[in-house]
Length: 457
Ligand code: UD1
Ligand code: CA
Image 1 (cartoon, helix red, strand yellow):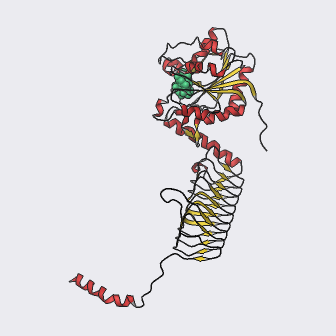
Image 2 (cartoon, protein in one colour):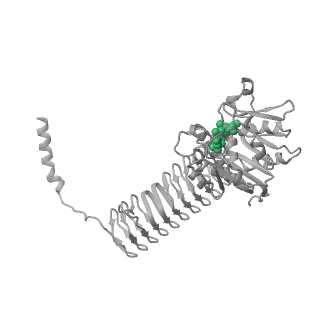
Image 3 (tube, helix red, strand yellow):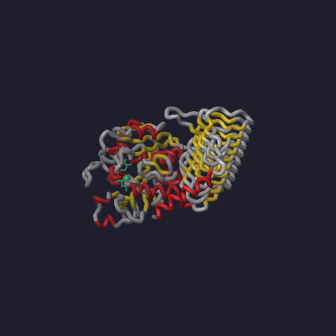
């Protein structure tokens, strides 16, 4: 059963701020494109927003960040030509956003783990009486460090946000921090934004000042709290690794709730789109890259690496198997240790059990591919296909030089280099014939002894 469709938020829009350089990442790649569980962090955030059914999503990017705009598609982007701060970035979205939204969610591209549930809670707080002009999503991280602090009055109302580097020693002791996410009255947002200045430690237009600006105009501001892990901001590589750990923990839990057994969850790495069927068993140290689906009851043994592969129900893969994009592993097949499969169909019941490379190929139903078999698919210029018919038997250490086909039920002798098609039911041998010289060893012995004798002298 799928969850009931959430109510679409028809009069709500969202702006994601993603124009920052992400200098602390020390990367040639824009920060929001760094991946978590195999997809750019900004796509995680967009996926959460899409679940809300918002009327519009705008992503603010910086100059030269076409790749971010591409990742944001089909959603609109706005260009912040100069990076003068988070308030300035939001201002840049004005035109792309348009008018008439009751609520505008503002989110940071580097805070990608926020869930749709939390965002719904944020919107609900904005709409609840006494309808504050803005609601800030706060959190209490173990180490508040560089996060902005939420300053509240004696009655607990939010009065302002102070950035860590502008805060007094006393303010720095405040545990309630700014996650950066907020829900703002759409009718007032841009009228308030223009009042934000840049008289602060960084000389930037801080979005956080929106609270004080609203309060100065007699408007209400409120804060709600969310989970600090979910709301962490990613500034450097260590943050990225910490966020990855959080995403992985979520994915592992979801996989197990879906009926898969993970022998050692901590050592299994999943992608955002990994699909594991019921009663799938996954051994320790297995990596699922993007685009993998594993059918019911299949087993993925330890140290296997899968990406872009479809594994049918009941198949057994690994240990130490590598399934690359385009691998389609049929029902009840066995893919064994040190076997690499790429862009190939292994049909039901086939066995490829040891030390083999199958690329750009079909292995027919029930066929058996012996140890050390290689489909030689690349001639240095182009890739070619190998077709192995149903029920065929390929002996050990066979090179299948593509393009080539082995007919149904044919047998290829061990050690063969197959360059021509093999007819159905035939036996193909392509290896030097064995030479036997009777009595050779005995004739050789005396000479060996003589050699040794000389050595001793
Ligand atoms: C910001 C908040 C801080 C909060 C923290 C939460 C401000 C002034 N500070 O600090 O209170 O605790 O996030 O993680 O808002 N961006 C632009 N254009 C700019 C500057 C930034 O689009 O000119 C974007 C960045 O790409 C990023 C987001 O805004 O996605 C936040 O900017 P960042 O510089 O990371 O702010 P923090 O110092 O982390
Ligand atoms: Ca940040």
